[in-house]
Length: 198
Image 1: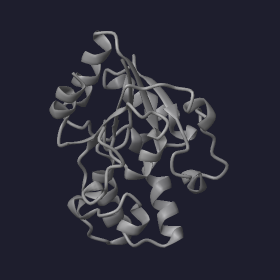
Image 2: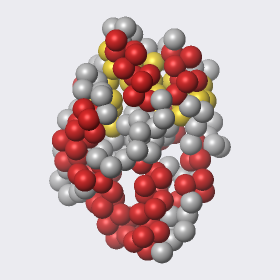
Image 3: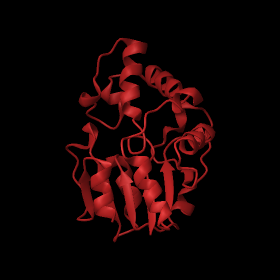
Image 4: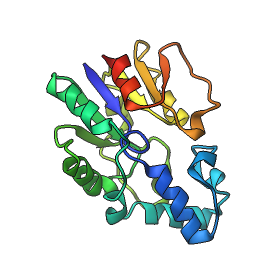
């Protein structure tokens, strides 16, 4: 089985860190539970300059390495790999974050998972002239049986896989989204994801 897994807010608790960061940087008290939009600039009511600064701060290597694991993620993914599944972590982080992201996976026991940086969201503006390690045309040649994703903005990347089973990790910013097909399943934890993937 080929499995796609998003990194931020699926494997690790990125948005919780950004909630604390925006309070520290700008004095804005937006608890994690109130992050209503995947677009953090909109959720935190930031200017372009504030958003760019926040994203640069949140992508410093030492910060990326500090993100907490989403409970149950590592154990579940390693169980899939142990049984022979092919796991690809496909993140919207720019390639400049690759080394720290790879180190996070390795130090958390996911050294066997593949890692790709795909420009899912056009976020390369906050780190000028960013590169990505996976081009869209190459991504669209990949096949997946299951996907774990939290962002409604990423669902469009699954249109070419009509039989894909998508586990949507329940997060505040996807509460009101409409799933584009019957293959989408809301999951509240990694145990639910594991049960659905099998």
